[in-house]
Length: 278
Image (cartoon, rainbow, N blue to C red; front, top):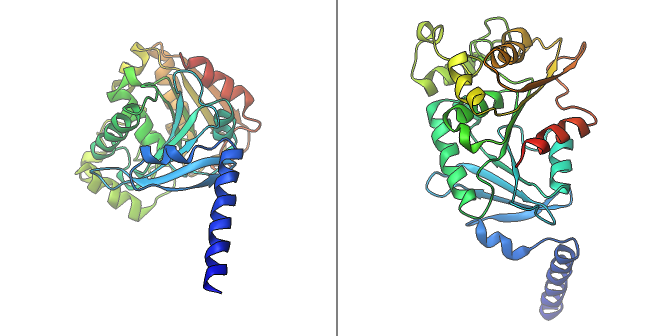
């Protein structure tokens, strides 16, 4: 019976490997991601691992056939939520990546972690200029990181993005999340009074390096978003960016709130982002 059990396990392993190979997956690629747990995500090979020297949760999803120059889209938050755009780009040969900075709210610590992740993946042949995807609170890090690294960004996609932490989680006109607000202040090392005058992602000072580099910005906004009101987040960022001469396109979803995220279908958005990748 023991021999029969071993035989079944070997046969199952062989069947799984055959399935990986038949779907275009490359199991050997897991060697690029130290200690990775490899699985499947929407028909593509997924690798979960800890960022070396940091420990942050990271995810890499591989296209079945990488496009020339190894383009990729870098999601800042809510991996797997409303994935239509990510899947469309994977099908076009883009890699998909995630590096957790959820409770750092775009602070210098978040930017530094993303610096390490960018160095880590580009050392493996990926393009040095990814597309950044900031959904909700992810907007904080994508714009702050891009501002510090304008030459390393192909384009930015913000989806009902937080562009002012006083709005969310601070609750200035958006939704107050007291626990997140306390963690946000701690991440920046500032008091509520200091937060009132702190530079934000939508601030012209943050956007100026991006506008100078002509980084395309795409925004998808629910006009009735009461959690992250567009008037003091995405809409204000778009106006400031356009005034600085930055290329920006806004898709508005009339009457929709913070959810659902995404543009459906995502074809126009995907085309806009792909056109920015050179």
